[in-house]
Length: 152
Image (tube, rainbow, N blue to C red; front, top):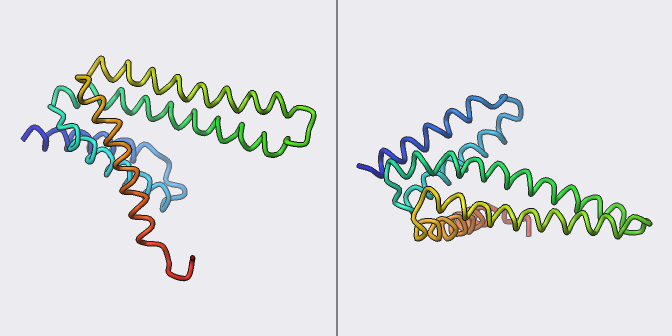
């Protein structure tokens, strides 16, 4: 019963987020929201969150995910600038900017562990990282199975 309540709570959070988004690029947005809802359900199940844990955990997790997306975007922007400027006089600065973005991402992961340990037992924090990786692999495998045959 606790799993069901936690799952419903998590799905409700994702539904609110979906309706708060503008409806341009509707297909891509719907796909992202579906994957996020699947991820929430998967993580809730893998961590076996109690209702109290879920209520404390999901706001922290969503904040960390938002920061991860921002860090990833900054890293991709720095990488793009490095590619464009590889032959320029600014290449050392561009390289350092890219490496700084990578260091910021690592720092964010350490911050995430600290924040997660405030709301979950350490065993569930460890399970979270394993669950995220397991979910990522499942999504990659799912995409691979749906690849068109002539696209090799």
